[in-house]
Length: 393
Ligand SMILES: [Zn+2]
Image 1 (cartoon, helix red, strand yellow):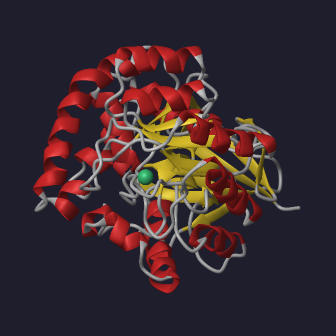
Image 2: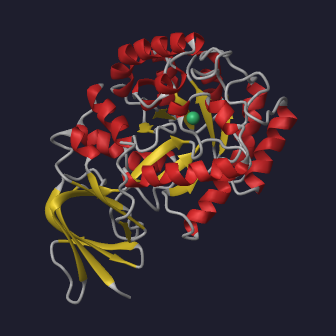
């Protein structure tokens, strides 16, 4: 088996140990086989001696087919499977180019995410490794409701089971209202305790977990009490909500870009007053509360929520809200892997892990803005040179 040696100017391996100068990562058959300071005899060398090398980024919350900047996200989800698959093909390439090598998809129609995951694995298209939910479980009158809805305990169970049968990795349930849909309130709960419990039970039974879209209010607390693994967004969470999440060891998946990035909700739905009022409210609460939440000890990781290519923006926002650059890099790598329960495979550069890494021009530990300068992406030991279309960045 061919051994490849990657010479790194600085190596941040994601384990929490300090960055190392002039380290050598060896890769065989798509896996990391060693981290040392010497190139083994006979190894083919990839010289990244002038760059900062770290594990590939993990986007814990996205949607393959949607572009929020095009507006009416639920309308986009209601298109047929072919436009969805074509959009996903374009979007996921953008994500890979920005450094995302693993991505969790949080709801698609037509099981497009399952098909796209398989197309990537088969090498038909280029994109991050996907973890998929299939259809998001949404109530008929709830946020996230596109073509299908699930109402009542039995229906939620049926939906969860259908997703799992089709190959979903986890179960996504839209518990509270949202920001980008005109008729829902981000703190009101569309689902009852019993319905949420049904989704959690079905996921648990197959060794997986449920992820809940929840901004705040009673719905967020119900989801945490009933045992979901991750709270998605949590934009309006109170200190009491966060304390409960810490107690139950529930992950907070931050999605700042959808609210704050110029390519987020504002570009797509800037003309809809019902949405913009909610967006401005959310921005105020996030700016006020998140510096405290992120310092509270709650476990957190990041997602772009389909602002494709903008995972670096998430890490930069963490730093702006008071997180150290070291912890921001961990949030984008190892912590994301733990939140998505794939930390045995990815998230750090250690022997046995998949050879997923990125090279950066500059040092993001000194200046997090350097995260915008990803100049090489490797996934499963394969380098992607042709994916750097920067027009979306
Ligand atoms: Zn989402």
